[in-house]
Length: 261
Ligand SMILES: [Zn+2]
Image (cartoon, rainbow, N blue to C red; front, side, top):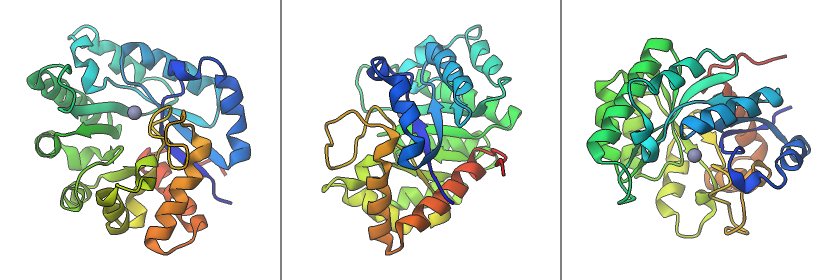
């Protein structure tokens, strides 16, 4: 029996403060088998690990998002390094580059801490969860210069062209696909969802953000992933069951998690 693996969620976000327990305890009945909660700053490394310890089916990615790159110093970088010792940690993330928001840290600062976190992944053997927005070229170039193909991981919430997808796939990366693929105007992503080999696609919510249609404006959670599954199945002309089964295998492989029998 296959279950949906939500490879990218933020259940420690305050959008879930009201009913976190309730939402999380309802997921298994909705067909969700596993979730990786993703940290984005130094505080959420702690809250992510706390959650992952409370739920046996939840894993953690620990790292600092480009939006918060200025939090990192030689000293505070130790918090990321220490979090890798935790038994629930499965990846370093989310890390990367975000040139979309003008208020984000200066690009050289973003690039510096992206590279440092990649070097840490190379040194410790963890895969990486990459956030990349309006920065395709720099992301690919920094990955190439910092052992990307040896590290491996996922380009989450993939928003680039088929040609860029090919470049990341050639480096061994997986493509994270979520609610956006259900949007009418998501032509580029639908092309990528058709083009990428099925064994390199991962399902993700990025919840509370990126809710799929219908109810695009609502708070997202993993129970809405069947809408994403359905769209990928339609695009590829295969069954929803096959999408769930293959992407679940992919998630365990990418996160290097040994499956319990
Ligand atoms: Zn995220």
